[in-house]
Image 1: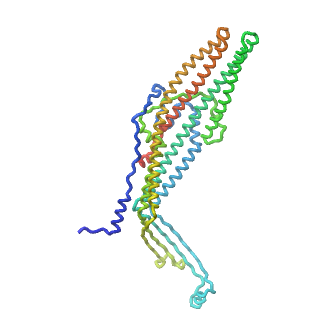
Image 2: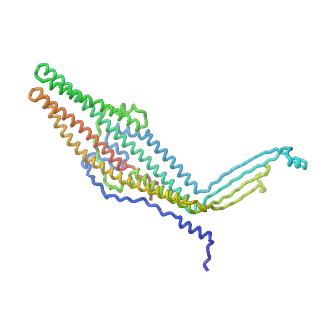
Image 3: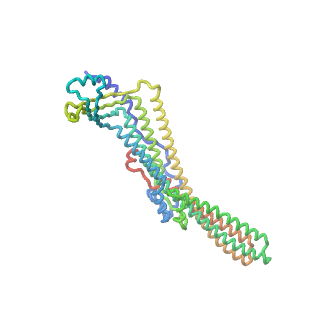
Length: 483
């Protein structure tokens, strides 16, 4: 005859089987096997490796290197992300401790002098040995433990651990963002400085032409129309300079804010310098590699894991909670008798509590948790797709801007020679002033456009390094948690 299990034990085992959560697996997102725009500056001499967390050093600019390091040390965005990690780590410790027994210890000592005006005191005072003063001493230690029979506390611990891993990835993401934005702002500052130089050089050239043409007008060798055209071109060129200077000042302020300091220091620190040129970025792995390189993807996936664990935690609310406790104490009416066997007291208890009816409150909590999980999954998949798109966009921009910069450099060199020849020809009377000014105007436009395109190519290097994760990889602890 097979022995029968008690009804309560059988019911408990059935509930445990129903409450066992499905093992978590990261969401799947269909990705291409390779990027479409991988032929990026393959012949370049400087290459940024995706696994290099100091990718900005590929620009070979010590001012930029120092500026990025200072910004990473002083950034308030990084500081805020670190504070969020501190909070998540503390919450994770609290969740872990909830699975363990908790104990408290307490003691008391009291002295009471009874009033003889009380009826009981009047009667007792007539008895021999009556003492109006009484003492009471106690020393207790109590412990309690919720037995996690249905996995509620384990699910809370998993959720808190996933939140901590997400916050850790958030710190890495904040550092990557700050480094990329500082590099982008630095490139923008060098671009504006160069464009201001071009505009000022053109203004000086036009001012000299304006002086010459006015002399020719006075001598009757040139028409007043030519003088007016030169003056208008000079005024338009000078009008460009304040706008560029205002943009440069705003860029300096942006750099200071990213570094976590009051505006006013970046201009002195940067001084003058060349515009960084674009570098090649090695892209050997496909889009799937982003799942372990991008901090924002890791953080999004950990948020999915946390939401999944909280769904399991909500499901566990369907089942009762089991608690055990114990008390050990010493109680005596005098200090001398406190540590004797007569003063000893002890107790133990066990119990459970569960919902009799709640009118759908638990079910509502479960549905809300499942909705948050769906939202987290959708956010994760959107983050992955955006990451792949960012890499593709940066690859395309870097490739095309680099080719465009080469073409504009050739055009700039040719127009520079044409400008010099037209200036000599105008001074010799072989061409009109309109032709000389047109050559000067075209050169300025190409120089300005070439500067912008070179800056765009350098910014594309930054954005591609950032899109590939900037050399960051999930720590072994985070990787183990994910698996």
